Length: 222
Image (cartoon, rainbow, N blue to C red; front, side, top):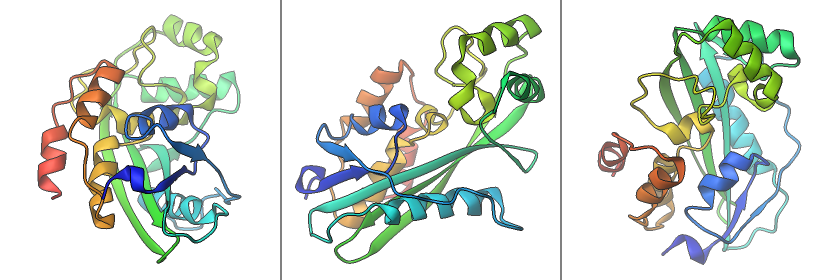
């Protein structure tokens, strides 16, 4: 069975997730449900992103038919065990970018795939170590002025070519963008959906990134 056998639904309004899922299928819809994204007491960052991804996948209101498959993801930046969300204003964006500058933090994505017909829900956690370069105060100021940080967890976009906040990156670029494509492809195997071997290459071409780990991801999780 291939992904084309399903009515694919992306439970996210993220343009970056739409871009990446579009490398797998060009026929999917976008639908979102109402999910409470507040952090629960004593909830760890991994528990948080997995819960949100699962809830988002199950919150989409659709008919329970054999062809439906819902895909959801939630991504957050974690620094020293603390979740760093989207900045609410320029001052918070500046504080966040100063905090992350020249250091290593983690990007966590909870990925969930849900089949309404039999209530099969598969979720997994993907973690990426991110090394930030030692950008200058002036670069921070110019980046904030561009408006790019305000809808991004951690106040940055890894793919921003002008600011290029990340240095020495050797992991899943797509995960930091919010949708770890190879891990998604592996998850599809649980639903007896075959993997299109061209997708990892399409991902690298689309992102302009030579991924050093995609073969490892696909081989280790067979």
